[in-house]
Image (cartoon, rainbow, N blue to C red; front, side, top):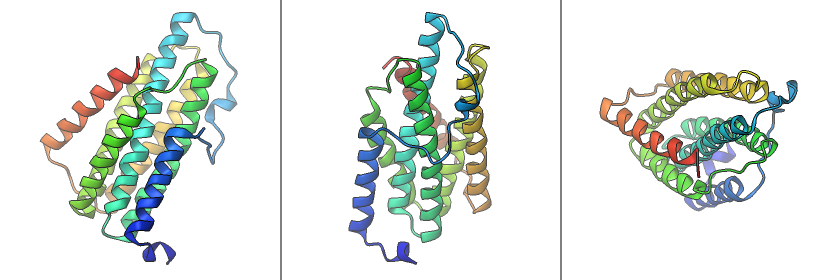
Length: 213
């Protein structure tokens, strides 16, 4: 009931607070990292740099996911869809913390361009929300389906012995599939082929850049 009484200013302040926590604070997870169940492998230096690049991409993706879902929640027309977006953002927050932890273990850092990924994704999410709840849910479902494919690719590219990163990505993949299923069950609209292609191209720019920067 309390969420239904939120004003536009309340939503804006909440969005700003979430942005600051995502970009400036050390993320914390509600769930323990799946990596904790595995021992650390000894990686060659080129393997360490490669895994760090992959995890930096995943971290940037989670920053973008936080922004996308916060933008969608900001312009959602119904409290039910707004709550769906917030729940997805909360679980993506776990993913963000797990990726951050793994980057630290690899003696590496997040993408220097995270503020750009956040701002762009928030704008896209807010725009999607203005198109109606079914379209907004469609963006959530399509985003998660594309992330699923992206995680499959990273799982193939991980060094065989890096069980810690693998466990993180496998759990993330499981969660993304569930988010997409939830959105589709809630009435997500099927997005047009040009919109799906634009989303893929945008994601490709981010992933190729974040690997290095």
